[in-house]
Length: 341
Ligand code: UT7
Image 1: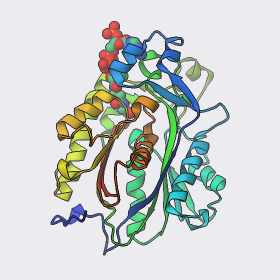
Image 2: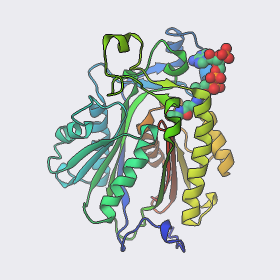
Image 3: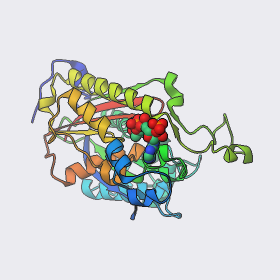
Image 4: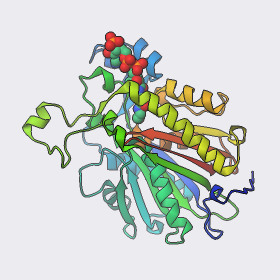
């Protein structure tokens, strides 16, 4: 479908140069951790987890499988779909809050693993919103003609920062990676618009307090569990619904379209109740709303990246259809993007 816009901010298009996603790919580790498995680890039940979150199982990376390994496998699949070789990649951006190590960046480790030695590489962190933030950064380089081919990856090994004794959080998260190749494609509008936002006043709602410069790892910090992920679930939930609805609404307003023009809405996969509340307020039909969190739980920056790949593989979108991505995460951060597939 070709949409004409009156609002100049509707098109992320600079002097006729648009940016499209020409390939997607994802990878999840083999090991499945079910709700029944979790019942043996903490005081919880399949009934509680399913009714409060919609999650049935999640993937857990092996001890010797790191974020860069998951990212590399997803990247190779996206490159294959786009028909892109490692030598063609100009830039690699990895969105993650669980890098292999503080430095060097996971993007540099991925660069080595895929052999994209011509590419610049860096990580960026916007928690669960990271994939949309990274897509937005990547597309600016394509539109400005600085680069021809950008590899954007959302990848997480959240199992490495989850406190497996805390039932409030350990049932929610999983590991995985998703990737996209960004390029200019003739006769395609690609990204129509993207919206990003943040609210640092609510930084404490969802955080990993230890391990950074504010609280370097010491025997005491480890004993206090400060290197584990922490969340105020209820407050995060409320902020998530409001921020996702307003980001999605703003993205559609800029494009001068309503929800009926969107073929597939791909929301951050944190909680089925959040997804349904967002869908209800946006007026989506069940067919429009893509959900896969029952299989993977919340994979943070990988979440919409994996979901986009699965939606494409399942035939939920065809070339020319409009997709709405909408995310929310720690920071707080949020974002939305409208893309012509
Ligand atoms: O990706 C970033 C964004 N993340 C999110 O958006 C997550 C947002 N938050 C949520 O998804 C939900 O708030 C949760 C799923 C985390 C929690 O659901 P809730 O309906 O807000 O539950 P709650 O926090 O009100 O907890 C209700 C009860 C508590 O017991 P009491 O105090 O009422 O006796 C918890 O201790 O459920 C208890 N509980 C559990 N019970 C069994 C908490 N976790 C569990 C558990 N199994 N795993």
